[in-house]
Image (cartoon, rainbow, N blue to C red; front, side, top):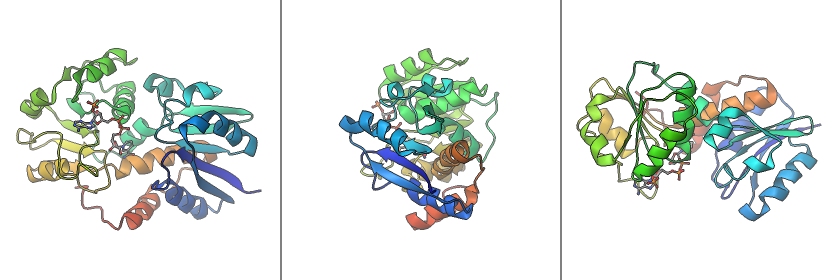
Amino acid sequence: MNRLFGVIGDPIAHSMSPLMHNAIISAHHLKGYYHPFHIKRKDLEVAIKGMKALGVEGFNVTIPHKESILPLLDKVDPLAKAIGAVNTVVREGDSLIGYNTDGDGFISSLEKTVCNEDSVLVVGAGGAAKAIVYSLANKGIAHIDITNRTVEKAEEMLQKCPFPLKGKALSLEIAEKHLNRYDVIIQTTSIGMHPYIEESPMEVRQLKKSAFIVDIIYNPSETKFLQEARKQGAQVQNGLGMFVHQGALAFEKWTGIQPNTMKMKQVVLNQLGGNDNANR
Ligand code: NAP
């Protein structure tokens, strides 16, 4: 029998996950298929019952269901519960278990090791930022400041973090002035993506030359923020690695197989028609 996997979201047609997962299903000679399911908000509950009834072995969850799916699952992993969002569901017997692989996927993708002594700044306080901050804190990285347009959201994220964290919430203006304090800067806002391709969340003139800058956007492959940081001499990385590694961790949970992440990355790069120049 064919094994069935998938992703639920609305919209879903743009998702690169089916392409990436079907490539590894085929590379590992599994008899299976990964399908994009277009599920509207109002249909989420019935869709989850449908996933169970149809015997789907595992699926990813994307916008707008990452938070609202939690009460519909049989069990939620503690990290996903703390983050308040699930991006991966695994079927175990008759139960559906929710996980969040975004933050750990981000950490696995890092091309430079981030250690406890590093001073880290996260730009943005949305869902992706929370997954990254809580996963870093869970791994013992405790010096994380958060800057966001809405500073109260950054404060709340710091206060509610269930792992030790010694960070401050800052306005974008204050963070911009003191960028030279940070060894690692992680850009997680949607600024830099369509329709904000010409924009950047902040100026990077004060950047430390040795800083490591990650922007979790990967389309475009190099946001204005990354371009400017690279011109200042910083090492930069885009969000393609995070996307690939969150998918690889999900695939491993479903199948027990650690997939070839280079192959996954190449498939997505081919589809985007780009190269990997943003990561250097
Ligand atoms: P989200 O929960 O909606 O958060 C959006 C963030 O962007 C918030 O911090 C928001 O600030 C900020 N923002 C939005 N418009 C802004 C503006 N005009 N000026 C300043 N700040 C603005 O979204 P998310 O799920 O965290 O996703 C954020 C980005 O990460 C998206 O580009 C998404 O594609 C990317 N992402 C990448 C991966 C990957 O695998 N590489 C995974 C997940 C997400 P406020 O709080 O003030 O509104």
